[in-house]
Image (cartoon, rainbow, N blue to C red; front, side, top):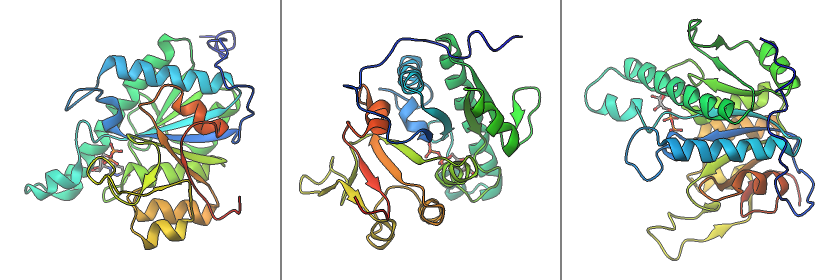
Length: 258
Ligand code: UDP
C-alpha cells in the first residue's frame, strides 16, 4: 500500500494565534484513564476520537509526534497483585491492556487520515510491528505517528517510565504528559482547594516534594536526558497544541533557566 499520498493526512490548520512550536519532536503520554471519557472503565470512542483530533492538529503544525498510552482504564498490575495475583503476570496483563488502547488510538487517527504505526515492546507480529529503535525513528522521519505499545516490555515498570525511555530513544525535545488538571499542584486540587499550582519546577523539586507527576524512575530518566516534561490538561480542547506552543495552561519541568 502506498503511504505517500495520505502521509500528511488532514491539512486543516489548527489555530495557534501564530505562535511557533516550542518543541518539534515530542512524545505524548496519555494515561489509560484519559480514554475512559465519562465512563468508569474501558474505552470511550468519542473521547478517543477527540484526542486523535488533537494529535492531528498538533501534527498539522509541523510537530513530529510519538505516543505512549497507558492501560489503567483496562488493567493495572499493582492493584491486581495486591489482590493476590503474581505481580509479573498481572503486569503482563497490564501491558496487553496498553496494546488494546494503542490499537484504539491508531484506528481513530487513521480514520481521520493520519498515518500511524503501532510498535510493541512485546512481539505480536500478527497485530503490530515489534519495537526496533531505528525503525521507529524512520517512521517518525516519514511523518507517521508512532504509537509505542506494551510499555517497556518488562514487568515492575509503568508506562510513565516507558514514555521517558522512548522519549530519550527518539531524541524528543519534550515529553508532554496529559493529565486531568491544568498542571502540577502541591496536592490534588479536586480535594484540596488550597493546593498550590506550579508554572515551572525542576526535576529535583518534583522528586524532593514527592509531587505526583510521573513515577520517580521516569523523572530521573528525563532529567538525565535533559528532556523537559510539559504537564497539560488532555481533557481541554486544544490542550496538545497549547502544550506545544506554550500558549495553553501547563507546568514545565526542566532544569533550564526560563
Ligand atoms: N506495565 C508494565 N510494564 C511497563 C508498562 C506497564 O508492567 O513497562 C503494566 C503495569 O501493570 C501497569 C499497567 O501495565 O499497571 C498499565 O500501565 P500504567 O499503569 O502505567 O497505565 P496508566 O496509569 O498510564 O493508564
